[in-house]
Image 1 (cartoon, protein in one colour):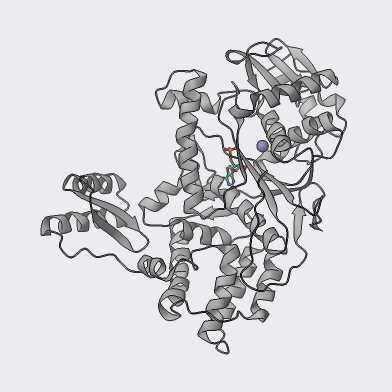
Image 2 (cartoon, rainbow, N blue to C red):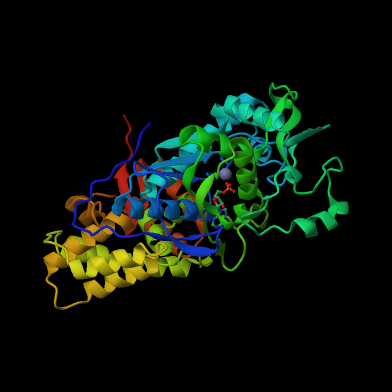
Amino acid sequence: MFTELFTRKTPVHVRDVYLYNTESKKKEVFTPLNDKEVKMYSCGPTVYDYAHIGNLRSYVFADIVKRVLIRNGYPVNHTINLTDFGHLTSDGDEGEDKMMKGLKRDGLPVTLDSMRQLSTRYIKAFENDIDELRIIHPASWARASDYIKKQISLIKTLEEKGFTYETSDGLYFDISQFPKYGRLGKINLKKLKSGARVEVNSEKKHPADFAVWKKGKLGWDSRWGKGFPGWHIECSAMAMDTLGKQIDIHTGGIDHIPVHHNAEIAQSEAVTGKTFAKYWIHNAFLSIDKTKISKSLGNTITMRNLMDRGFTGDDYRYWLLTAHYRSPIDFSWEALTSAKQALFRLKRYVYEDFKQKTATPSIEYLEKFDDRIADDFDTPGAIAVLWEMIKDSKLDDKTKCGTLMSMDEVLDIGLSDNLQEGTRSLGVIAVDDLSEEIQALIDEREVARIARNWDVADILREKIKLKGYELEDTAHGPKVTKANTE
Ligand code: AMP
Ligand code: ZN
């Protein structure tokens, strides 16, 4: 097993880390289950499409949790799962399945092989997003279809222990056998029961019972017939396989609390008889122009979309970190533009003014910064300390730069790139020997881009490509390079 270790380059006093536990509804001091490593599991994306910027908030948040723990002396063993096959239903055991939607959309046949093909495509795209956002890769990327046997074996144990019942369409977890069901809250079992008339599946004993196996024409063979494991079981199986029966921290977005995480607890604890996760932490949602992100509303924004408009992963990461993870945030291009300008100023200090020359960091400011960020990952508080330090006329440039470098070990917003890279990312990249025709096309495209006329901008980018040049939007304007014609 691989455990990530991290060498702290600058002197920071380790301190207690506090986190808000969804289960106790309190801020608690973090104490690990063992002193070797912290076991952390994050619910990953369903890889049927590009991740949207709301999904990415979850992984930037998990990255900060991990870095803060590492900085304070805890090695972290981290798993993120990838949901790469469907469950024949939506996440709530009804409606249309996301993978099926993805297959239809991309014109692929409904087979296990094409699900694998489809998900491979979006896993690659997701990993690109992760890299663009400087998120440290987990020790394990757990792909659900690689863990079918483990899932079946967990389901068998649940059945043998009497926690399930079979219906015509699957095998269900019987919540009446697990009295502590719903411990994380956000679910009203009594109300659900009284509204049971609207329940689509009349064979279920309680509306909150959930599928651990779904029968179907497609899928894997099992003693309950051909089909798919239920969605929730994959997380229990992969967390236990990669990390063990008990984990320290489980992360995810707040939408997972009522059904998915309550179900994960029930299944895992029914099998092991032990507490599954010690701390449950959840990020609040991101909306766009005050509207929920939804495919049907067509308001989805991806990392690629941000980059097409000239923003970088650093800009988005910085903007996300200026809000606390438990506060809902509303995305707007204006807000992201302001964040980009602020980050640009910071990078300018580091690369142009300070020329990245460092001295021992200011312990006073680092202590304040680390106090803030170890207090339930208060990134806005920590960033406020950063700016206070920059503006402090009593500190010399080298001390400021050294302090920024240390802060960037946690924030990782691009202040520690090598000097050349950093300086380059600040300036507009000019290509002198461009013909007037190409220059005119680039200018025309820039006008379209600023006017957010994306269709026209894309057509112009293609035209430029046909003339033998690649055009890439960088943080500070379009960068043009000769296309590789070899
Ligand atoms: P999914 O692919 O739907 O399972 O989502 C992947 C991760 O993104 C999960 O942790 C979700 O809770 C989280 N998530 C989904 N939508 C949003 C949103 N709008 N804002 C923040 N997190 C989200
Ligand atoms: Zn999960």
